[in-house]
Amino acid sequence: MSVTVIVGSQWGDEGKGKIVDILSERFDIVVRYQGGANAGHTVEIGDKKFILHLIPSGILRENVLCVIGNGVVIDPKALLDEISLLEGMGISIKNRLLISHNAHLIMPYHKLLDSISESGSAKIGTTGRGIGPCYIDKYARKGIKIVDLLDKKVLEEKIKQNLEEKNNLLKKVYNQEELDVEEIIKEYQAFDKEIDQYITDVPLFLNTALQEEKSILLEGAQGALLDIDFGTYPYVTSSSPTSGGASIGSGIPPTKITSVTGIVKAYTTRVGLGPFPTELLDEDGEKLRKIGAEFGATTGRPRRCGWYDAFLVNYSRMINGIQRVAITKLDVLSQFDKIKVCVGYEIKGKRLKSFPTNENQLKQITPVYETLNGWNSEISNLTDYNQLPSEAKDYLQFMSLQSGFEISIISLGPKRSQTIEL
Ligand code: GDP
Ligand code: IMO
Ligand code: MG
Image (cartoon, rainbow, N blue to C red; front, side, top):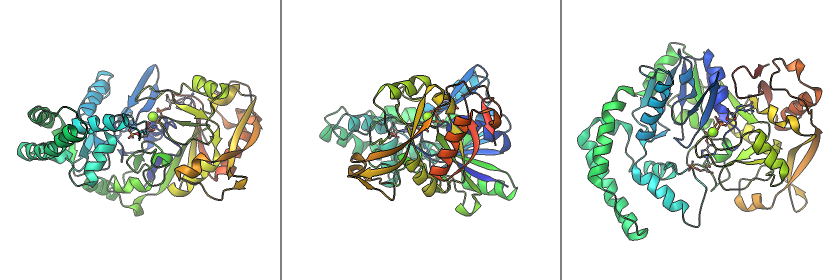
């Protein structure tokens, strides 16, 4: 019986979708445990490209059952759009998707408040999907849950209560127009008809599946450095993408988790604002973005690019308990003569012992680099580790040594076939 957590080890977009799709062939159930439609997980199969936002990437394997856990915040419209897009592409969803009755709903005012807060001076560079404001309401104990869709009266009452406060805020604090209560009630009451069929007691379902010795893959969204507690706060998301979040966001007890696999991009990217010690603002950064097609899968924004930060991933390995990793996008480095790796941080000439998540400290960092030779040859069609150029093997070994992990998968392109398992 295997219960494996997949975590992004950097700032998201490491290629989690591709690796979850590869691994889910061997699992019975795939669960999303946090985040929402801020995620964009890409899977390329043949000439089809799927970008999953809320539905687990396991949905593309027909024998896999997919679950959206209580830790996820669900925009019902985004969910229904995603379901119909997938169905239109020939993927069956009925009887293959379960949604936790305890997941919280993203409401129109969450998206509005997200955009208002991003127009102020304390910008984060969010995806604008209402994620932060929805989690605020969850923790303020004012949120509206998926289960509330099942009772029209309860739903109406909760929307009215919430809108009284939100409209006050919009009008008096932000000088905005009030939202129409009746319109929102009508819109959300209609979701019940379509979403009802998926609603389940997820902790019960998953724990029963464990008793039946089913294997479960827990698919994290975002990445460890975007974690609300362990990330580069305040430039983070509002949930817990790290492996600890997998338990809280699904109802699978920590004692049942058997392994944690980190997804590690062979260089570093970040979307949105916040510190990024190894960021390249020169032509090398531009080259990484171009070759790696580093544009957001959800917002289309250009991703900031930089060298691999082994010091950061070592921290990520520690807080997630990562045992094995999948290295993705190694092919993107194939056209570089020299490749740098950050092996540590210095502040005023003093080497840091541990990764600082503090914003002020992060601003003062000078990365310490080691330079490795590139391999300058096409590797995206290789199928065996032994075929890799010796410089590429050296690079992988250096990553592994510096960040303290064991490599179990190497990805050399977006397609299923461009994957080497060790
Ligand atoms: P996720 O959010 O972690 O699932 O990652 P995204 O889907 O946002 O971004 C990863 C991008 O890289 C997608 O466009 C993938 O199709 C692509 N990709 C994944 N693995 C590889 C790889 O090994 N090489 C290349 N060139 N592209 C990859
Ligand atoms: P996947 O799952 C990369 C970033 C946003 C912003 C910050 C907060 O595809 O790896 P939010 O909308 O969550 O309040 O934004 O987090 N962010 C991501 N960056 N990949 C993601 O998801 C992200 N989800 C959120 O750009 O900096
Ligand atoms: Mg992504």
